[in-house]
Image (cartoon, rainbow, N blue to C red; front, top):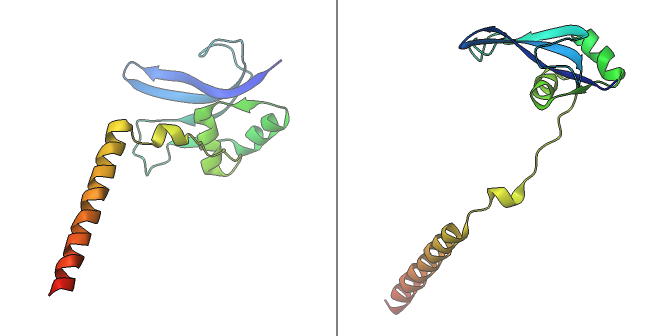
Length: 124
């Protein structure tokens, strides 16, 4: 049985509240689960206690092979329970063709201005 540590939505309409649960991957999002190991209230201010974790039980389930989802892994990394690998997508962060052309033109203009200023100072 493949296990996930994931969020199960509760609360009312427009007022979400999530339970952090250990569940079989085949069960529905808000359906059957094995154990509730925490909670997340996204409506609380960021500096408040938004996430509550039962660290002992989470360590147990991680030892049993349960895999956390991306969002839960962020919470576990913040709590120091499991390390989250850094994301790396260098091509997505590069500027597009037009932006690269503008950057090259601005760089060339700056070099020309610097050369002209240097020539003026040398002639004086």
